Length: 246
Image 1 (cartoon, rainbow, N blue to C red):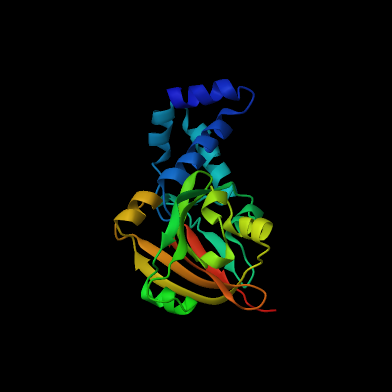
Image 2: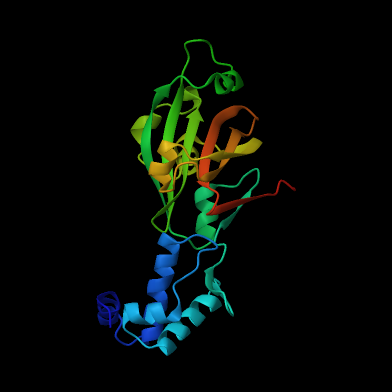
């Protein structure tokens, strides 16, 4: 048996070998494969993990049952589309929505501070020539894998001492707990883009990889603009579905 499977066996000695192998393959699919990729054949996997083909076949059956791969006669085993179907509506919150899907999420604060925004955003806030907004850059990870990077532009007058309070996690939670702000989306724009060098580094994708860029204008209960957020998400891992029906 291979060292990888042997180490796993020590941790879960009572679990059948095919299930141990299925867990290892599932982890590799999440971290190393995209939709449409083909897995190595049964013989190659049997040789790699030093198990028989029956064990490999049962492990792949587990992955088929879990909806992670499909198997076709003469074609092999193929990774299926595992993109997250993320609902966007007026009140949806990224962290909350991902948690409802049973996913472990982490939001890291990359940088924050006062910054002059691009002219289009400055106009939306009605800023003067020398006025700034609070700019917060975050990285959202799901099950330890980078999913999207976000840039938040906040009206500094509405969130005093933000940089002293925010250290990561849900920005919506901090807005509610410390500032009494319950924001909703008033304007949403979805565009296709390609990963630049920063996207490639942070999202662990190749340069020019397809991205979905979602820009939201978020307002308070009086419909006053408080935030403009811009998210760059890997198109191979996220699909958006919009529902503004009330």
